Image 1: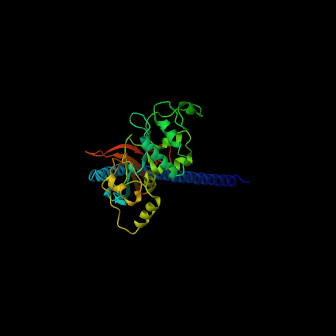
Image 2: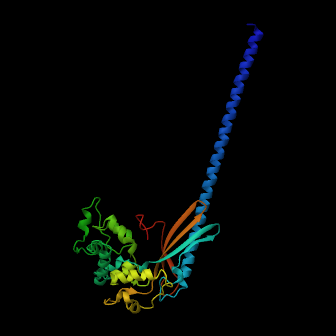
Image 3: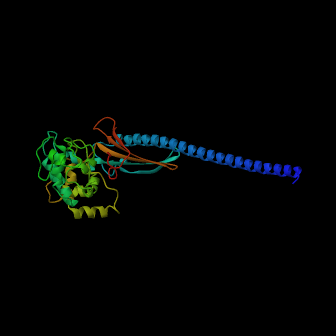
Length: 323
């Protein structure tokens, strides 16, 4: 092969290599550009999600303020399902989002802390009512004794209950609280309470300050049945209300207990009321792909403005900690 032909082949080979190198550089540059676009888009999405999350949190806080205003404007002597605050506000459009608000009267439930008195003695009236609720729910009534031992400060073991020794034998060992419950989720730690019992009981109980009465107007049918109401008449009343006008709030404990559902029963008015001070506010904010659900316990005193006393991101029935 002549020198000129060799030089030509060498130049063609070099040109081919240069073309391949150029194509590789172009491919790398294109890949880097695509990766940068993806990273930038991810960063933009993350930033948008953070911004939407922050806005959703602000809207949730605003919804809590609205809930407090609804409670403060209400007649504090009578509370029940006929009140404005008791009507859910679903899907209200606000600032590019939808906000849902629901207020739940927590005094429509049985207060577990009422099982003891302020001087650390067993409240016999409250215990009897709670045991009837357990019976209605088909739960072993002796669980009430275990809850009393969990709350009280003494070492006197109630029948089927448990004090320090019962909990120290657990794995891992523990101790009863020796104070009023802060959350109904504490039931999960009580001696003898199973997860199935907890799930059955949780919708009907609460953990409020000792001595907080049950609001008859807001009480669920099973709570009323535990107080002595005729279950057949309660069921019929619920059926009638599907076509009847919205229920009215009853103005006094005496008037409430004088209704046909309680005929033939003698019910002590102790621990009963027709108004409330403690409400659970549930707020759900939907903004683009962001959904925020927040829970707040609101205390509304007999006079003055209501106030938030606890906040949570968890619902009691599904998490380990809640209000």
